[in-house]
Image 1: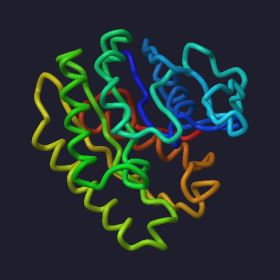
Image 2: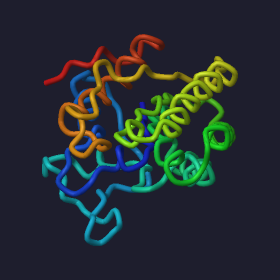
Image 3: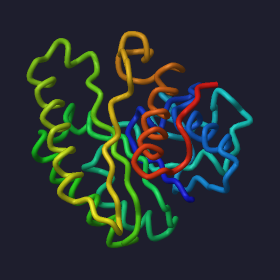
Amino acid sequence: MRYLFVGDSMTVGAAGDYTWRYRMWQHLCGLGEPFSVVGPRDGLYDRAADAAVSADYADPSFPPRARRHLAGWGEGWLHLAPMIGDVVREHRPDVLLISLGLIDLGFYTDAGQTAANVEHFITAARAAAPRVRMVLLPVIPNTRADLDPGFADQCAELNTLLAKAVADLDTPASPLLLASRPQDYDILLDTYDGTHPNASGEHKLAAAFADAMYQAWGLGAPYAEA
């Protein structure tokens, strides 16, 4: 299996992070089955450079080949939908693990516009690989939602629209799956700033994807935190 991690700042991570991508890679290694991680990027976000140019992963033994992704600090469905077709054609993933939406609602598009970009993304990915599988993670509201009821409502609306899109667009040839929000995810305990995951949050995000694939598709195994 070839996996492509797709996401925003929660997925790309910043210099010094492990990232949930690393936790997922560890889980996949533990399955004892052949797999690869693919994608056009491999860096972490460097705050000083304001670009994803850092190689300073918390575990320096994280292999370069496993660091690949399509994720960006400040990037959402709006930005990645136009490029996903070319990325899928070039890197040939079997499964897309996608965590997007919070940045869209925070800065670029409302829930309805974001949902339209989700559909564009799915259509473009399938045009490039008609049998590609996709797992989508619901938006996890950050601390802004505690202070801005309107933003909280937009997060809830987008999650409703994501569930509808998955139900409407799922096909046997190219399955879509909406993962469950990570169990007991607490933005005060599982993030380091109210948005970005710390070690416990990384494990919970990886578990959400791993458990969803196992429960729905029989792929892999339940996540076991080390």
